[in-house]
Length: 383
Image 1 (cartoon, one colour):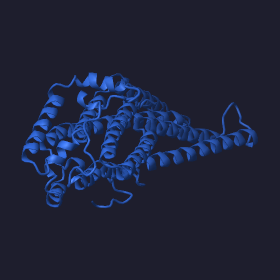
Image 2 (spheres, rainbow, N blue to C red):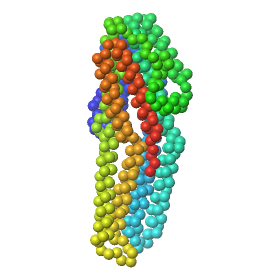
Image 3 (cartoon, helix red, strand yellow):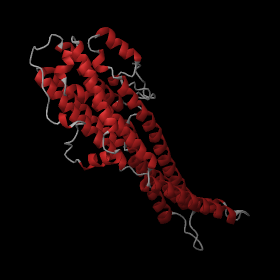
Image 4 (spheres, one colour):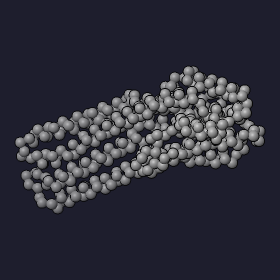
């Protein structure tokens, strides 16, 4: 995979290789591990995943675009209010002074109204955000179905490597589980609500039969077990670990870098606000005395600049609240550490311990998905 630079989005064309979307990855596993390709290649599940993945991306883009527009409109409104005294000063004694004042005031009113309507509409209805999160929920449940089925049927998966009858049984189980999830699962709104109410994250399993651990292979029970567990480790742990690292890689698309950049800019603007307040105070205290109630122009300009900076600070904080830069960064740092810890256990364990680690990984995947959806469901773009 191409190593992205700091100005490139490392996940722009993420191939979802854990589900073998990339034909090259499928060919590689088929050529290097021909006995395993039928376990990890699930075309029907990829089709179900794709139907929701494209929609999730579309609604995510719409939701965030509308949120950014709401913040931008509110920011412009605050800028006009902050600049109004300076504009009036510059237009003093101009024939169009009254007209410009009305345009500035009307523009600020319109922008504030539009920002509020757009921002609160995302809270009250938020159809694009809800659709994004709903479809993302489905994609992650499809991914979890793939690996939950493997983790809870390891002995059968091992048998399929050399037994045609076991391979047919594997196909029947996959078809049955996928059909059940797609056609008999509770309505998506109820599923998401149940997930929100699952505070201890105790309900990750897509089948009631998987709540209790299924049979595990005994040590040395199958000659091909090492190969199976090696590929499974890369497909479940390695790809998730790589994804989290890409998310945390420094660059303009990294939530960690964005949180740091916006935080630094906010701190700088705060210092400048204090500096402007100091300048304004010095002007009023030690500058030339005002006559007939007038205010020194330098004071007005300093206050206007201070207002612009304050508006920018507010806008950045609202943008951070809506895009969840810091929350997302912290979530991926936690997830990467947790995946790595379970993977270390997996590497050191016998087959029974590896199955236990796989089940822990499925619980972790569910916890991360739940945190993701809950976090972004509460996102706001209101100035």
